[in-house]
Amino acid sequence: MKKILLYATFYTLLLTACQPSKASKEKAAITNATETVKIDSTNAKPADNKTILNRREVPVLCYHQIRNNIASDSKRAHDDIIAPDKFREHMKMLADSGYHSILPDQLYNYLVYGTKLPEKPIMITFDDTDEDQFTVGNTTLKKHGFKGVYFIMTVSIGRKGRINYMTKEQIKQLSDEGNTIASHTYDHKNFAQFTDEDWKTQIDEPTKKLEEITGKKVQYFAYPYGVYKSSTLHKLKEHGFKAAFILSTARDENYPLYTIRRIIDPGRYTAKNLYYSINKSFNKTKS
Image 1 (cartoon, one colour):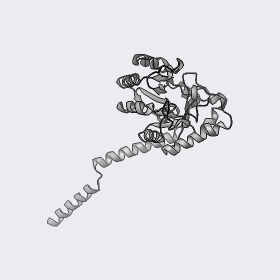
Image 2 (cartoon, rainbow, N blue to C red):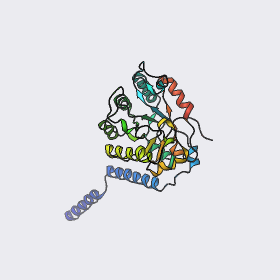
Image 3 (cartoon, rainbow, N blue to C red):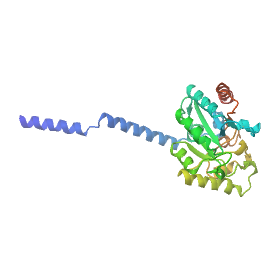
Image 4 (tube, one colour):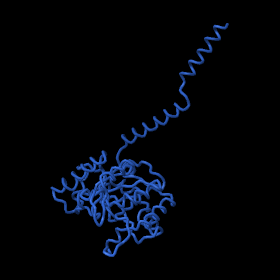
């Protein structure tokens, strides 16, 4: 009788040991869910241009210099300059209003595959490589749990002068911290004026340089001055870009992924003005 009880006890313990724990089951469920998402995303049929254009637009903000105005600044330059204190106020308003920053991969997957975005998504982008985008911009974004997109003009990397520009080390740090590093040409040449040679000097070489700095693929582009040329948009895809960003002009119906709209947040705006502008510019449901 004792032997039977011993065998029964041993068998029970063996079965218990072979059963996965609750934590293991939960971990397996999470792993399976992740794998399912990956499989679904891979097999999903990409949306056509009409579907992409009809998706509700995500607000995308554009910033350049984050500094105080000086006497030598032109009237036009004031649109591209925002004071540090005002920039901080604007970011606080976004956070207090419940916005969640997203990055280009998330926007691309939403537009192409209909992937769900967080509630009240917004993208925060910076053009031209100015160092204040790192010292003020990145510091402020981190305070609110935001990530940004930095469109780098590679000719300026490491330059110092009246305006200081980001170093390779700062660009690498931004990338390592989870921000997106993207292309803004070599020296801000107008995209509509590209020659055949410019596809090497303004596109391929800057892409290679940024990839060497970050160790990551560069797949997004912003047009200098927001200007594009419809007849050459197809070449951006040929040169490895998944999407590209204009400013507030009309999108191209044949290339909606390569004409994603942004609005500049002018330095004269209050936080209330910016909130109003975001809703006026983007929060319209397509019919």
